[in-house]
Length: 479
Ligand code: AMP
Ligand code: MG
Image (cartoon, rainbow, N blue to C red; front, side, top):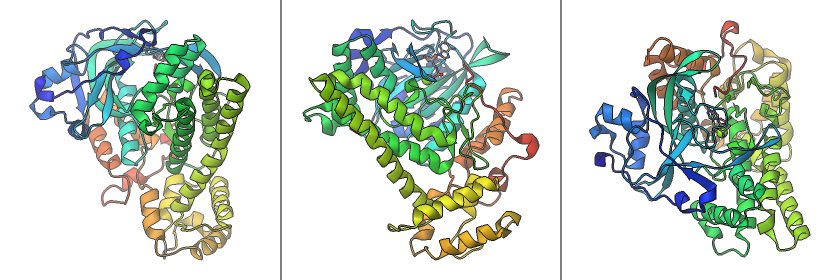
């Protein structure tokens, strides 16, 4: 195991003990490697090439522990669809924090590693399909340039898990800048644990915002910084048509990384009301509602931090409110800048907002594919296809062309992916892997998604929206 060159320094395990529980993963009967992420391992300074496959299987299932690991389950709370609950890692264990060669600090977490004190009625396990789904989508998000947790390995456990059906069990190794969530702070706040809350603020500052260390009120700086990161993150989701699906406060990170790929999905046709998650009945986490949901979560974060924002309670409330309200303008500015880049619009122009709005309205009315419509727009070219023959589009196109400049092509190339993890293609690759034990479609899809910008020969099939019979209507948490 020394061959892997783990370098652990477990700062979370040094926090006040009420914030986590120490326990080992529960061993599994027959671990078998399904997929290893060699590129990510390289970035982490881990040498997988010298690791025998059976040892990799034992390591990434938790049957063997690396030197320096101090396994813990983290405590947290969360508003799940608006309802507050005390939670915690119910099926995940953080082995520790690995220090990469560039000095970066990463949580190494096993997801599906067995019951913990926070499991409630759950079995602590995960199924192969959903773990491979997280692997595919998180790696695609990374290649798209969007902050995200990453996936280092998926190992089948040789155990069955019982959901609506009997499914093969698996464990995902998740790599994250940290697993601090809005809900982590809510946990300490709900217990009126000021010591724990302060320790979490200091920990978050040290890990993610070291420039705040000397600030008068690091908690206030932290709130501002998280508001900022989330505004940026949600704008980026909307750039590529990503619908998180379960934006509960326990699934919103302090680092600004996307986390928890349960019922997430990508837009095919543009409709801001799109919801895929089977449990999101009210459309709380619909595509177009994501900024509102993010701000609601940030208000919960601000509430949790109140005791540390100011000595006077009313003053603290005022400060919190101001920072949370500021999200709206920050998001709006980020979103507008992002949409301008998608359309190749450089510089500030008062009409740009109308131009963007008119295109989106046209797309919604015509069931236009979100990814392919932007990909079809190019300076100096007229998009072809029956839909674009619409005079309403022609009028918009003429106005748009008048706004283009030398930098347009470059801006657009870097903002508009050709390939996204389309739901029907992800499902097809998962079906082949899980039901057919054929990993070839999965590897091929991962190869395409690793280079999402710029069309490539032979990859046409990956641009195709679903045929009517292929359309994925619902996604499931898989828990
Ligand atoms: P999620 O919807 O995946 O964000 O999970 C919400 C909460 O439920 C977290 O505390 C999870 O750890 C917990 N959980 C989800 N699935 C299981 C499971 N199979 N066993 C135990 N806890 C679970
Ligand atoms: Mg979660």
